[in-house]
Length: 416
Image 1: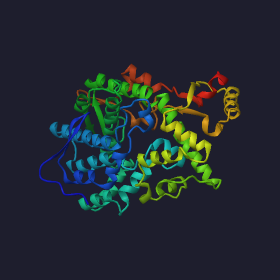
Image 2: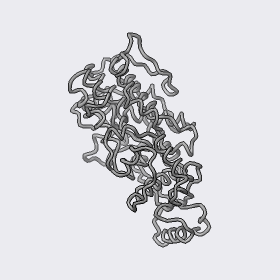
Image 3: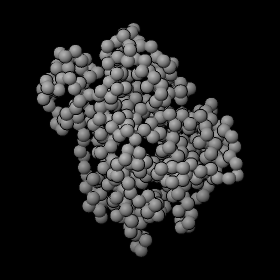
Image 4: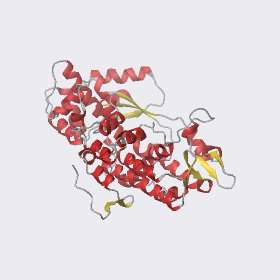
């Protein structure tokens, strides 16, 4: 178990927040668990580092950042004497720190192949009696692990705590937009975090924003919009993700044919065989995958061998924008790949990416609770943000999807 915290505060130097402060022994103990330390070995942005070389920061640094944002928000609530039960402070901070504890290596890409979402693993890590995270939480108070899991799963009855960890203006988004922007070297994700925290206020069962802070809120939502299109949907990083998925799919298919490649780590074998348990899952990190790809670049199977070399050496797939599906052209791409010796099942893909930058249902309905509400202190009334903001209304209504076709660059002339 972790070494107990001394009486003095602990401080992490951080490129986003300057300093991250830890005063509570519970938070310090959670940070030093094996399950949290594993996140140091998992990149926050998956394959984005192939497009933005600085984008190789870890899930660990982001998790610390989410905790720090929540700590700052709660401190602001206390300074302003807002209605807030201080008994929930540790619950909110612990849930923020642990919200990504279940992420695996290259998590979103891997999830699409094996079908196991990180949220399931986060809950398992928090609730399994064998994990250090669970033991620390239960040592604090019996039943505390379940409470933290309920907050992360959005089923806790205290909606204010849930909204700090998972909502339109949650600590998760506030940290990752700024952190990813700083790491990748782009300016799109920068906004005035201190001002955002200053204009947040708990009203009834929701976190609202004072109406005087509308322009600051717009800047935050626009930052999210631009980060998705300029960083998260970057075509080169998406190409690397397509190749990574093909590698894993080829390894699984070979196993089904009785030609399973050698697995340098047994946990990776159990993952691809869909027999992975929590103990094995917690042994997976980016290094396990990259080591396997390093071994498989000399595999007997030519497809697996070539895909791994492409991924490791950044010789990725070419792409064309594909806004409208054209079946005849897509079939031509597949035929060209197969005719040139590239198995189209692994070398050709239609990749679609899209998101809702302000996630609520325009025009009312049962998703109105997910909106960001502006609070008029004088009239003590709430108004949904897009009703008074043209920029927010515009991005809320946008349904644009990035659709690209990926294929070996060697057949580029045949498909144009």
